[in-house]
Length: 402
Ligand code: SF4
Image 1: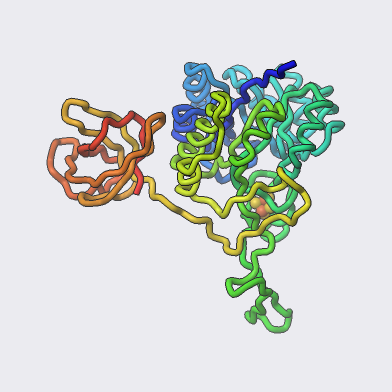
Image 2 (image 1 turned 90 degrees about the horizontal axis):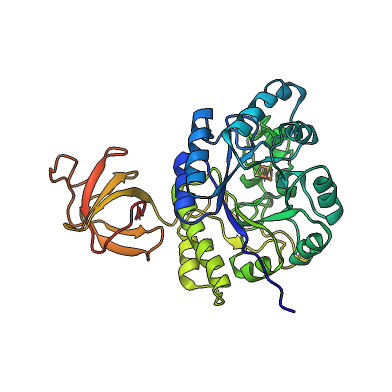
């Protein structure tokens, strides 16, 4: 008997409206976002109510789905305004809300909105998944600390849809359920205000010797014992899809447009290749994942939990390419692209174009004109529109990068 595997959804972060557009245009099937309150990214741009209405419209016009993160651990005072926000989300037409708090879950049930259990709820076994399903959740976002075998067991024993993280930053504590930031700075990760204290460089100080830092030496760069590498499950994509999970999630609502576009494009191509019957990890995909800001990659716990969490020995993520602008128009007659500037670039500079569908290509900027047709040597103003000759036809919404 042959088993049919449904194509899972590719789910991408939408930190703001532009990132939402990038995610969908580069191939995501669904996006998740946070409003101004109640999601776990208090310092992200996040969406106003008007932007949420605009985002739902943009997403649904493309036949895709949009989920709202309401995954704070709520305090009593939060419930004074939460019901109103949930009714707004329901009216706006979001496809589901992500929750982690049982009080929030009970309130969401009253609205009739679909419920996805956030990874923040730390579901690590099928019994917990089943309890949430019995309580009304249609989907469970599993904890990141699970092996493939554990995911498969949960799938066999729970009828809810399952979602797992496939790419992005990891928490050293259980999927973000962490007190480190609150303890050290007063800013609570469980209220969306994490200061990423696990990424800091730590020393030892004796209390009568203020200012004298004794190294806690892992190596000459110091000690970063809590700074996890980033997750990248691209090499395990075939196993993940075969496990029957419904949704593959990319982390990163605080990340750049360049990150969202590049990572989504890679996983879109990889997932499509699996269902075309020729999945194998390609060098061009790995090269693209190297061009976005990231710490060294790890497969985390997915292949085995029989190893320590891998630590990255510096607080700084790598940054491989600069995001310079977005192609807003292309004139085939003159082979000219109109680019909305995002980073400074100049005549003579070597750049490349990441396209939503076509191949990435590189070229040198040979000349540049401003909106009035005047020749210029560089584009110094943010969001200035400039015309640049291109060596190949270029798709709208391509990203120009260094
Ligand atoms: S301090 Fe680190 S481990 Fe804790 S919630 Fe923030 S990012 Fe996660």
